[in-house]
Length: 345
Image 1: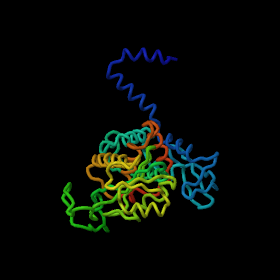
Image 2: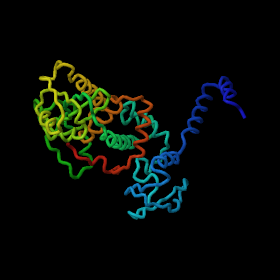
Image 3: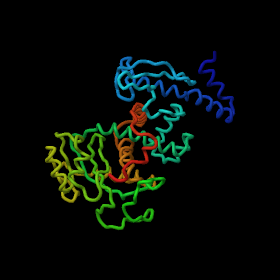
Image 4: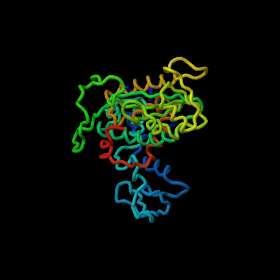
């Protein structure tokens, strides 16, 4: 049998066209098939050789034959909720016809911040599929990022985005436009912090951890701060903000030390809000690439930015984390439910 060295020597005699054909063949050999996804899911969803029900979480499960498909898919039966399921039920890859390599390519596209069309072209999938995959993966990331807690010196401030009802009109029988339409790309008709603006409270620390999501319309409120930051900033942290009064009530309610800098400029000893201002600038640049993000999806894009552009970790580790967490995440929404989310926070 030829050794690796023999094969390397043979490569020198191949034409460019032959090398391209060989590369496609190697890629095909490495790409695997849907069973590779099932193998990955099996490793994630099995615990101590016990499979838990993907619908109710019970361990009172037994094997129940195989599906009559070309993959001979193992079926399971839950003795508690009385449902049949397979290892892919309620997962992001349920019903997928794409292999593991396609999902890995798509994760790579997300790490690069590609648009839906760019991702679709790169992965050989329809743009609608690329859109659904994006939000399924981001839903999983949102669930993971909900466990993030900020400690140490935490800088917080709010930023604002124009309300966008993009994607709510098409085929909707229930959506009613709550305001007069704006010309696309035009400025808001109202000056200042009107209810045409979505308020997004955000916080960061020096360890690369960040929190942020749409909370209300118009000016920040104490309830908006609680909605975003409750359970996300430890009681031992020192919260550094501008002079916004809502932070005073929030920090008092949560027994967090507060340092406020009037006007948000300059420093107060070692305290400032330069990191959160930089974070906002990068977030705006990231969102701008997508040519208008609907308000109902804005939270997902913020999580995307936080994970890809702000978190401290290598790109390779982030890709692995994103793939493994997304594939193992128990899906609660169908494809039909994704565009039917509330239009405003």
